[in-house]
Image 1 (cartoon, rainbow, N blue to C red):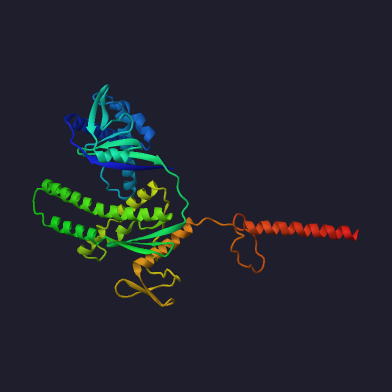
Image 2: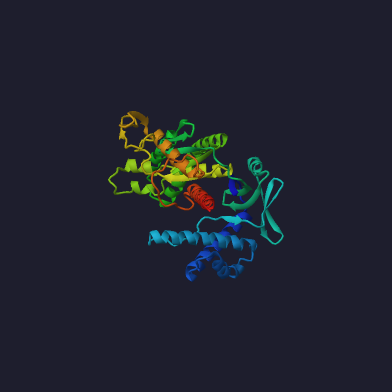
Amino acid sequence: MRVIKSVKQRYSPSEQTLSLLEDFRLMMNDCIRIGLREKVTSMKSLCLKCYHTLEHYDNVATCYRLTAISKAAGILRNYRKSLRKNPNTKIPYVKKIQLVDCYRFRIRGKRLRLTLRAHEYIYVDLSPHTLAVISGFTVRSVTLTNCTIILSFSKEMVVMEPAGVLGIDRNLDNITISTTNSQDITYDLSKATETKSNYRTIKSHFNRNDVRIRREIYRKYGEKQGNKVGNILHIVSKQIVEKAKAEKLGIAMENIKGIRKLYRKGNGQGNHYRGRMNSWSFYELQRQIEYKAKWEGIPVVYVDAWGTSSKCSTCGCKTYPNEHRQIYCPRCSISVDRDVNAARNVRDRGRVRFTLIESPNEAMIQECGTSPLILQVDGGKLHRAQQTQQNHKILHLHSDISRL
């Protein structure tokens, strides 16, 4: 299995670089317009329609035509997907300058070489951290913006066979894990929640009438918030993946896609509560855990989230809330933290997904009566039944011979 990772760094673009990024943006928008006009639905069709149309960009190397068409095809695919959900989706248009290269870039020493046109190149210095990260790997693509460089690299990895399961329960202020050896750990994320709350308060006091300035300020503070929260999530996700790797555990998480629908305007919830819940970075944490786990060859599965917090992880009985986020099970007569209980339920559901189908001869319960056998399920029973039938035939044959 090929796994992909990326590294980002900042740089200072030259005038030639900015001009190349702008031309690439215009090429993508031309491809999007042609795709919408011709109602193109595939990458191949868009390439046939657009490749020769982009010839008037004679100051740009031809290798960028395919990447521009590929990016435009992805944008059109996402647009049609959004259009099925919301008929009022805006027509896509690329505003930010960027460049994607998969063919002609080269890394020469400590510099990245990009092709401007035939026998003309642009060189960008790479930082020591970037060079150390990509050392020994194959760089697949380069993405440039007006201030950042993103290098994507890959390696071949064999997915390991897990010896156990690590269940993860994601919450607003913490993330709780439970392993097969009954070890429960809670990681505190309250600092990330507090950071988001502080930045929401700061942005709520902006009173500038100029929407352009206000949007620029929002972008500035949003970037600061994302950097701080992303660093917290990076540390936690790295510790979880390292633990799973050390103990050879597969990772199981809840599938909570669509949870934002619970906190929409009009659901009878306050603005403060909806602001807190809609700022929950559950998908960013999931993304970081997933790509780091794949990089280490650790399998990741998603299980149903229904009832993980309300059902007892020991007996499956319905639980009742107690004080301080504790739940009580009337059948087991125990109280347990609801997050720990949810992590254990996720672990147990993930164990079913990871456990291999064993031979039907093992751990078999005594059967009463005769029932029809099912192929591929009762394979061991079927084999024994066939052997028994053959033995009966041999006994009948011997008895017939003896009577003769």
